[in-house]
Image 1 (cartoon, rainbow, N blue to C red):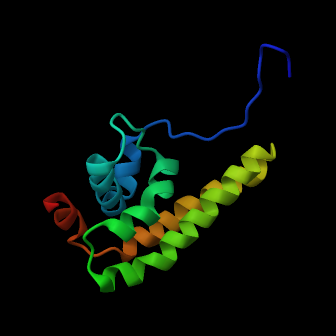
Image 2 (image 1 turned 135 degrees about the horizontal axis):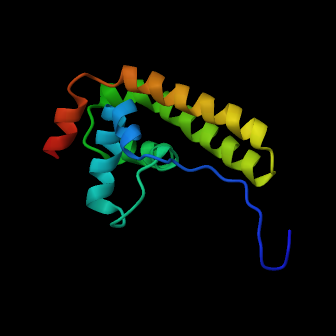
Image 3 (image 1 turned 30 degrees about the vertical axis):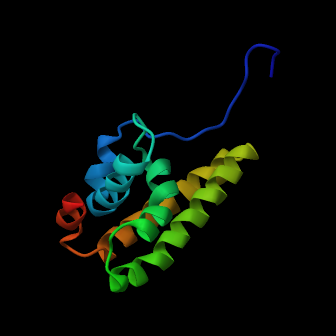
Length: 125
């Protein structure tokens, strides 16, 4: 690495609309909370969804039964995000890539567990 030119290993979402298309119920939960309490103009990528999911689930107006079903998956998502970020920090893109696949799978599993009326319910708040 030079004095001026820095080399970085990172992960970002190219098309944020794909996040909402892939995980509409989780997006409704997280973005509805961040629209109220988060900074304006915030990115809405995969890592942001994963990062804010546990708190959104904890603080949103979600029935206890739903929260109980989704919390273990939200913890798994947070663990995978942390592991992926660690792999990136360690300059291990191969491991980070594998963890990104696991992270997306965990989000997809959680999406299937969210109730069918989740989008409507979150849009009412």
